[in-house]
Image (cartoon, rainbow, N blue to C red; front, side):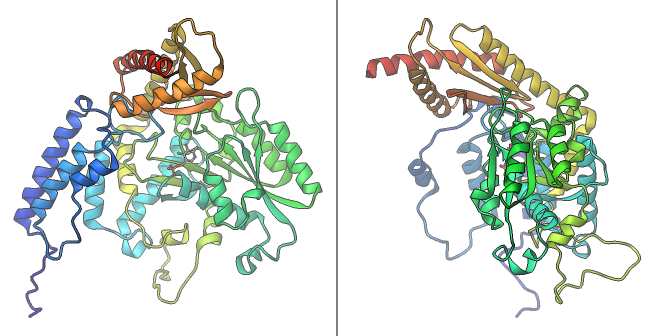
Length: 493
Ligand SMILES: *Cc1c(COP(=O)(O)O)cnc(C)c1O
């Protein structure tokens, strides 16, 4: 019976081609008309559940053609479109179309990029991608690393490597309970929430995180950093690492990395730089100075799924001495026959990070890096910054807008009614309400930030589809909706 196995999961060649061609046609139509659609349809969870249908698990199979036709409609017509030119909320970029093709191809081969023997070409492509990413941001190509799911994972991967390198080595066997001194880590108060998760995950606890205050430019105050480390050491703690931020998630500020590096050298601490969003801007000669000190980092986190426009998910950890990753993550169970005694070194990525089986996420990054090239990215990222600056300037000139901050490609601003003289509390409420209106309206998508106690609208341009016209229209929409929201709130009073 199992000689000529007929099964319900294989799709025959003719059908696969038919479904595939139709799917590619639909995706192509979708991409080319994305600017005609609303950014979001603003459907409620119950509306969506209604559309999806409350059916139970199918007992018998449904033909693939039917499924793909239905899901194409579901996904294309009921999603928030972060590839829309007016999506400037959070740091979720438009995805490069070549990345979509790459994911299809990667899934078709389905290499397990945990071990070289299971993914010969895919492993080499990932190695090359990592080397190119190091070159891209201008650090030594000798940095090694690994691709992970995103910024959080990239930071976690580096955090544990730092702990292995700087904390007593017995932790690996005994855990944290027997070490003589409590471990501490240091970061600016603008650092992304991943740091709390890392402190919990790797057993230090959130109290071990020293959130250092910022200076007037919103950079970590390095003087306070130095004093805090000194004080902790005097009080019997063991500092292990400092995290510098290269493009903070709220307002895009880059810490004084050179200064942080000097402090790390002074106290023999691991320097980790969270550049998940911002560090690709180091590709622009004009901004190179802003990232001074980057090449002294022991580890760097960056997110190809942000400013390099990879589809989700793609993050990357770069480590100056990749041996630290092996020291942290490598093990050699008897059931792996991956270390052949050849002359040549074959890299097994399972030894470089937390994952075991791993997908081929390198392909989409590798292809985009080549499709666009270094100079192409320099242009794309520069233009994003220019558009962000343009938004700031237009807000500054408008009598009903207040421009608040502009760093890298993040602008914050807020709506202020004409001739408004009352306090900040109402403006905070008004702008929060306005943001809700804008987010559900579907014409554009912004997010929020709190800067100096002001509730701001926040626009982050990591979008190769955004143009000058979109920026001008965004100003008009915000002012129009701001007026309406103000009147609505006045009526409620
Ligand atoms: C986005 C971001 C993160 C988190 O990255 P994910 O890819 O969302 O996990 C961490 N740090 C900074 C600075 C970020 O901008």
